[in-house]
Image 1: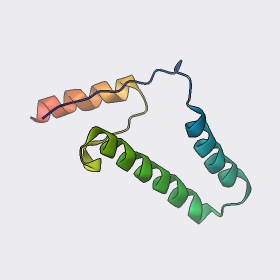
Image 2 (image 1 turned 90 degrees about the horizontal axis):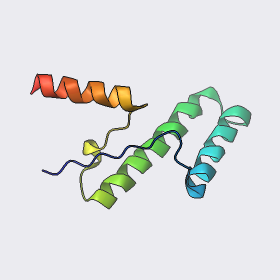
Image 3 (image 1 turned 90 degrees about the vertical axis):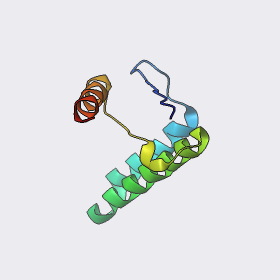
Amino acid sequence: SKLIYLDNAATTKTAPEVLDAMLRIFLNIMEILPVSMICTEGKEAVTKGRQQIADALNTRKEDIYFTAGGSEADNWALKATFEA
């Protein structure tokens, strides 16, 4: 089993294609989407991204985790280590 850790610091420039995808969702949320669709569109984007990353790393989408930052990732790692 191979573990790959990707840390994207706040100072890393956002790729243009990522910004385009995010802007579309942000604009839809603020302008035209009913509340019931906001969660659906965001969830679909995250699910698609998870699958794309898994495909690129030749792993399962269930092996891809997103965190809000380094502290959350550290806490997950500590908890997983403790539970193991």
